[in-house]
Length: 471
Ligand code: PHE
Image (cartoon, rainbow, N blue to C red):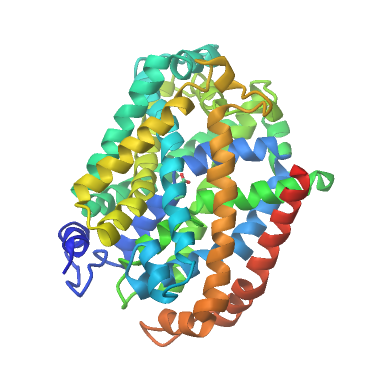
């Protein structure tokens, strides 16, 4: 067996590993945990409330849920199915299913998107590390100037770049070590922990004075706010949050055992990821309105500023906020890590499988590239004025990369993946793979219809709208 198989084998196999031709996750639960670990991350807690705030709140939530159900979930199943069938990285998977055709470019796009997303993802994850220390030191008493505290972290070149580097090195170390067994173990604690803590914080947020206005902004849709750009933002955010459109789920799917059920796995990951994002909104919007901030003026720092303004209100004073706040940032850091690992894993699996790199060399090479690429993002929140507001664009550099690679590129990637699955590989062949475990394919007809018609048409319409807006 080649290098990857043995690497993955040594690490991914839990006690129940099958030891087959290519290694598999320790168990079905292990796989769901790992995939959920990839999906749940900064996209849910940081990305979702930020994008929702900029796109009308409740109107966005509605369109978002529609995108998850009708486009996200079917593409999730398609990616996992391609992965399990080919047992390869995205480039190799397309090569295996459509030899000699230009479809491998879709895999290549995924590898590139993974590295670029990792570059700015690591910057935000670096802020969470800084915030673990801030909360532990009791920096958020009632009335603390949370905007100034954010500026002192993200606006300082040394702090921002140092924490970005620390996070990147940890990500590389985990991918090099191939400690997927570790991911399984961590996520088992992390997922329930994050969910419980989130619920506790939500309970505090919705009982704040002024919370009602926040809930109404988030849950009471103003239909006139639903525009083409809301659809684009919602679809992009759904793919980002579910780790779709760039081959992460193809890569993770390639380690699923033939005995496991793909449909229920895809559904479980999708539902869990979406629930966490919805809870994050319930936490952020009431707090934001309580603090009297303007949701539409939100940028990459919004969630950090808003969340920490809640901490001073958490009983028992004075240490309630310190305890809950630091626990929250520790969990967010781990959630970010289990996602960044999957971002780096896509390119690493490609270099190891296709270019015969060692795992160590591949992960370090791509990780260092992502680190360097991330430096302008680290300087884009106050440290360097023109990066903080790009000339002619008005956005900061980090938000710009998030929009172009974290959202648009994933929408394009998901379009190709659905067209490929439906019309090139074919829903029949894909269906046979889904049925490989027990001969059944629940919701098979619905899925076929969605992946053939609904996903491609909806995405094309969304993209036409984008192009119209640009010209
Ligand atoms: N889904 C991850 C998050 O929500 C980010 C991610 C995107 C990971 C694409 C892998 C691939 O934070």
